[in-house]
Length: 141
Image (tube, rainbow, N blue to C red; front, side, top):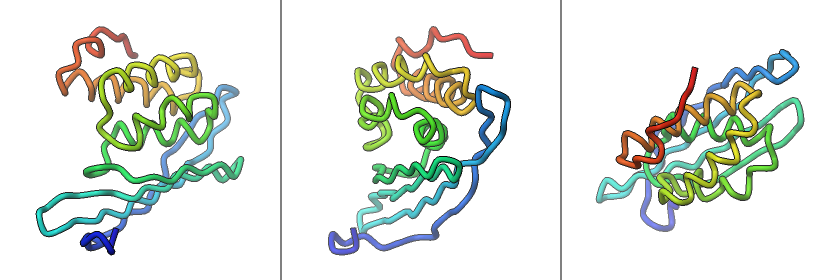
């Protein structure tokens, strides 16, 4: 991104607590490195790592890191079955409504994992707020 005129801003590193279906708890490591160019365009390099399994996801998000992207990344390092269909939702963010609907339909089947339930509810709220009516009819605890 530096070669494309972007300058690195302040990186963030944090953990997201995860409760698994069996009740055990762990954390996902998240690293977010924002970059900005002269026209105030922001791209964020993100890395999600599951220390329990060694699984990782890395990508670039258009814009800043959203709560939806954080929750989705934390879910996907545990649920490999949705990674392909959700890749378009996470990278780039925001996705088109059809891509979001496909990903969230997949994630819905894994809501027994707290991280995936959080991702489902957070992203549905995000897309509802963005004007996607299909996302406004969900029921979350």
